Image (tube, rainbow, N blue to C red; front, side, top):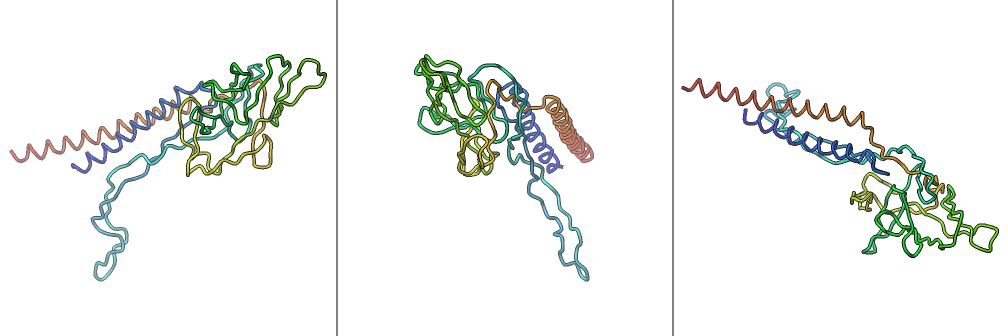
Length: 262
């Protein structure tokens, strides 16, 4: 009965963490470029009271007798499905339709990756994200430039005074990864490469490495499905409730045993 209590308690702890993940998904259901998270579980060690295949003259045990000791959270999986595109008409808002991440340079010089394309200009005319981190490769738009356009292939053009034809100011590159689910979440809509994600593969939007294309004047919404998250919340609540009833049942059995000894 002690074993039942600890086994059920492991399930309660796991479902609490599951609810924390669901809460984070719902809180970020309106966060631009947010990727849904899903908590994965795995069963814990087993006690082999009778090992399967053990010799038991004149035969062997077919199935054995194994008692599981509960569950444990194994990993947080990032769901990299495409979010819906939301039209903003802001010329510096850019959405990625397909695979890939924008690159930004952090204050310490390292490179971070993001799907949030609500860019703006800093005091030097450089394209930066909402945190003020410059887009890589660096692209600067002169203050007297007009009619700024960003093509689906990432080419940034603008019309300058005294010129009839637009001038190319630079080209946005996208980074793809062998395992995008292995990127480390940093907050502020940023992700960081890890050994699990693999090294970034750089290329132009719509290129040969599977990069997506860009849509100027759009932002990618969070890919969180609120209805699905509510369903998962109810399931987590019911699983937690079931585990708590197991703890109560084991406690009642202890009480009955103690009463028998009196």
